[in-house]
Image (cartoon, rainbow, N blue to C red; front, side):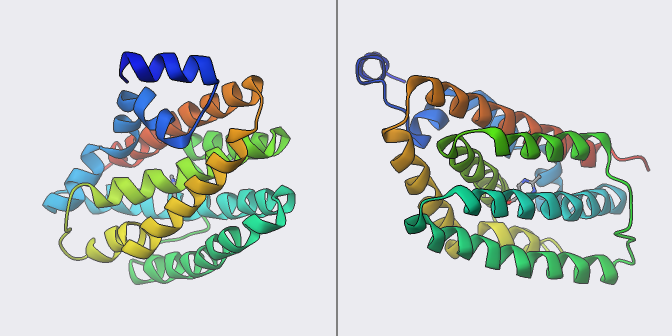
Length: 220
Ligand code: HMH
C-alpha cells in the first residue's frame, strides 16, 4: 500500500476486497502458492498426497456447500443470482468429486483430518457473523482456489481438469461477482464489521495454507 492509500483508508474508513489483498499480500501468497500445487504442475506430486487432498477436499466441499446455503439464507434478494450460480456449481462439483474418487478407487467415507475439521468448524462459526463478513469469507474461499490452481500455469494430465475446474474463465468471472457483492455490503458496514471481515479474510488465508500443508505432508 502507498502512503496515500493508508491515509485514504483511514479517513474514509472504507474496506474493499481489493484492499484486503493489498494489505495482506504475504498471507494471501501463502494461501495460494504452495509446493502441493507446484508439484501438480511439475508432475512430482505423489498419489498419496494428491488422493489425500482429493478426499479431504470432497469432505470440505460438503461443509462449504452448507455454508453457502446459510449465506443465501441471509443475503439480500439481488445477491441470489450469483449465490445460486455458486450452489449450482457446487452440485456439479460434489458429483465430479465422487467420480474422480471412484476412478482412483478412493473411499470417500473417510474421517476428516484435523485441519479439515478445524476449517469446517470455522465455516460453521461464520453463521453468527453479519452478512458482509460472510460475503467476504465466501469470496476469499473461492478466490483462494481460483488463484491457487491458476497461478502455476497449464498443468499436465491428470491434473489439467483439476486446475481447470477452479481456474477457468467462467469461475474467475463468478469470483469477480462475489467480490462485487462483498464490496457492495462492506461499503455501508460499520468499522466493527470491517474489522470482522478483515479477521475472516486472514482466517481463510491461514486455513487455505494449512489445507495444502495437510495434503502435502500426507504419509507415504
Ligand atoms: C480448501 N478451499 C478449499 N477447497 C475448496 N474446494 C475451495 C476452497 C473452493 O472453492
